[in-house]
Image 1 (cartoon, rainbow, N blue to C red):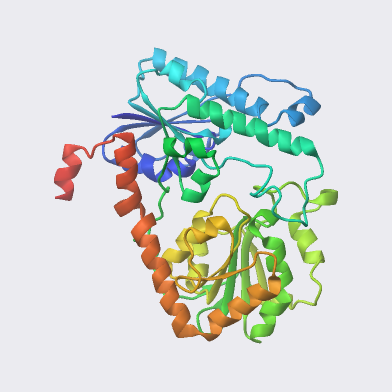
Image 2: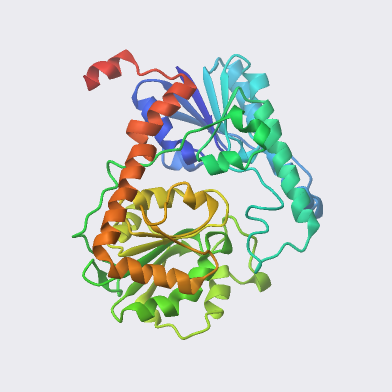
Amino acid sequence: MKIVFVHQNFPGQFLRLAKTFAAEGHEVFGLCMTDNAQKSPIPGVKTYTYTPAPGPEDPRFENRYSPVIPRLRRAYGVAHLARKLADAGLQPDVVVVNTGWGENLFLKDVWPNARHVAYFEYYYQAKGQDLDFDPEFPVTNEEVIWRLRLKNSMQLGALDAADLAVAPTRYQRDTFPTYLHDRIGIIHDGIDAQTLVPKPDIAIKIGTKGPRLDRKAPVVTFVTRNIEPMRGAHIVFRSLPYLLDINPDLQVVIIGGKGTSYSGSAPGGQSWFDVFRSKIERPVDWSRVHLVGSLPYDQFVRVLQVSSAHIYMTYPFVLSWSLIESMALESRIVASDTDPVREVIQEGVNGRLFPFFDEKALAERVRETIAEKDRSAEMARAARALAVEKYDYATVCLPQWRELLGVPVLEGVQRRRA
């Protein structure tokens, strides 16, 4: 089969699928706006880069209509690239697009005979989800809400231009209007649960001058792409004095950059990291708190493998891969009691939950996790079992994706596996 994946920052969520289908002998193509794929090419995958169509140059206009203008520019840009490829003979069987960037709007007109699959991550609401969740960061400009409606209009247009649609979790599917639920399937991207396994005897050195960490002393971990409100970093920073009170040997490792991924910019040109650090009310022994920034993936895994209690937090928003990965690693999960988390973490069964805004409750759940070692280990094993049962790429998610996309296992691959 000929399969096209479209993502402005390809491969994005499609890395494993692209690698799998290319390795099986299918013709796989990636259409993207950046050159990441060329820097780290995927064997057997042909990538093509498009340039967004020209658009308004007035920054005031661009900002006010930012949910629409960049997406339309991408939609036109990738459609013109697709037209050139079609004219050169490329007629794919399947086109899979992450709709968050607007790129699928015109592709069905270019390739009308293909099966078009829209990958949806989130449908925005003014009330009841991330926007009005945190009273510390209220929305004071109603045009923020208007911009959400513009984003949603692009999502609805993407759905209209697709034959099939999918979202990675039930919570994310359910953010869409109820009348659309039957049109959107639920298939997770999948995690490599066969590789992500616990290693209780592992150790890792933090930086060139930092300590060597292992399971002999308690290690509390927190992971986020960037230090910002959306993933509860402000609550974690406030909890630090209480966490360090638990045990004089306890160490905290915080993985995350100083940019922004989902939240707005911090006030006064600061980073959210600086804002949160400045607002901690009690003194913190920073020699026991290791702010390591973004780590290579293998080091991220090793940090979680030495963790005694792993904190995960999120607003009602997109669920992070890192939570499912930490479950596969048998991390002792302490997580915010929010809707997307409750889809995978059940209180007292495979983790512990706490009220999102209560830093003292967070620290208390961490204390329980460290103190009740046998119970915590039992819950950690249950967390891994769920990760393997529902989110393992090879045994669960890939077969689901294969059925949705109609991509067969080629005969030669079947013989090699036999």
